[in-house]
Length: 230
Picture 1 (cartoon, rainbow, N blue to C red):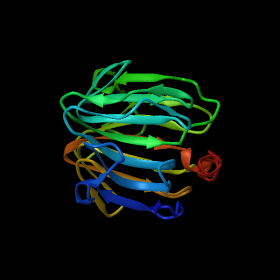
Picture 2: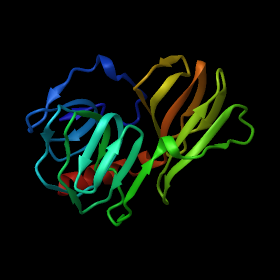
Picture 3: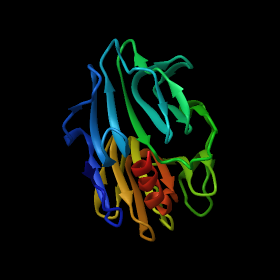
């Protein structure tokens, strides 16, 4: 399967317009944002767990990264409420479920193969620091390695930020709304910006909070090759 698989293209998705597709597990549905591969895939999706649903125990050969958007995600490592940011590195395993239902943004097969760093953060409890030369814009660092950097960006009303996506960028709106170039992105909108293009962000009257990943698209061909060889 290929969805939004031309990584030189700019992609904008308002996720509430994307249909839910059943996964192989009853009660677990997906909205596919980008995907290269079958059930083993380099993929970005919104995943919805119905109350009482679960996945079988499994190993994340290529790693799994997710944010809890609604409800509480659960596995043997704990209960993860809204605002949780989790990185389960390659070769990690778990048995996911949700007793009362949840919705998560999840990314698969987008790790460095040698990464073994577990990350479990509650973003809503973390501090933010001002970004120099960007009035009213603040950042909360979440993760960084030699390929990618992941953070939250917090915008005051009408605040602006402009930068070049040297290794590509991906953003997801967690609160408020923001304009990127000429596109209006509301709650849970997703954007992927190709390598070398410029982002020009401006928040709306309520401000905005966005999850931002940069640099990772420089490794996308290797990520796809790892999936093909899995």
